[in-house]
Length: 335
Image (cartoon, rainbow, N blue to C red; front, side):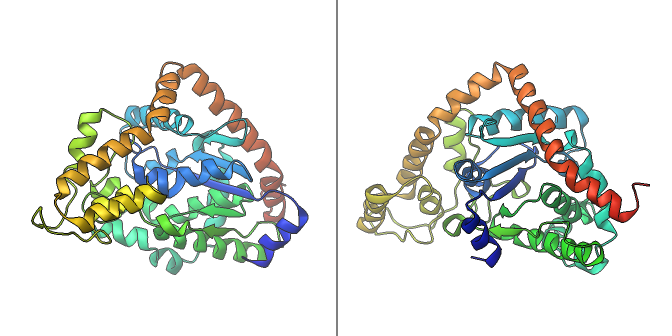
């Protein structure tokens, strides 16, 4: 733990924690265990900031009507999964326009080489995603998201650590020029779920087409689970669980005796991977039962969802204004 975080604890105040997620499709279990679950838990002990990153989503969603639809779907899903507007600040990125202003200002403190070394940009272009300025400057907008609200902790998956490091570098350059205005953030990785595996064993990602959705029909979810890639081992033989994609997904939902019992089933033999896939489907369906019920409520009350987002944006803007006003003043934008 850093000296800064130790001092926060000594002061007896809550840390400011921020996370965002793109509304680029149905939420999957990688979203939940890699980010949302941490954010829901953080609400109990931290000043929690959660936003829907619809500006970021424009790098992959070009249909305006679809993006609007996905934004509301994402808000509905977030609320269903436990984001509590009474305990956190929850808003849509584009409803706080000051983030774009800060994005441009921070661009002046971002060396080209810093962005050229960004893993996400290189990975996406290597997969055939068209190279453009928004994709290239994505980390600068992410830095603006983080720095505008004085975020102290940013929960991330292992693959997102570099983006927080870039935000730190940019903030340091800005502060060296104008004084200690921007809070230097730190990342937090939940070690046991750094990267959630997809059905092919790679990191679960919409881009890879290997996701298991949280919400949807039970039969469709099970059909996806049955596509999980596994070794070809005879049913009667014992099976390794450590490197099994089914097990590595199932252990996210299990603990204690239930997890040990599954390990023993692998070791014992007499069951095929198909049995473990069916078991995973049952466990997953039961785990999200309460969330599906909450989602149905919010789906039927979209005006309430919009009111929550409006209130969250107003609260976020109010918190951001002292920082952006200082920045306008020291940079000469305010004259």
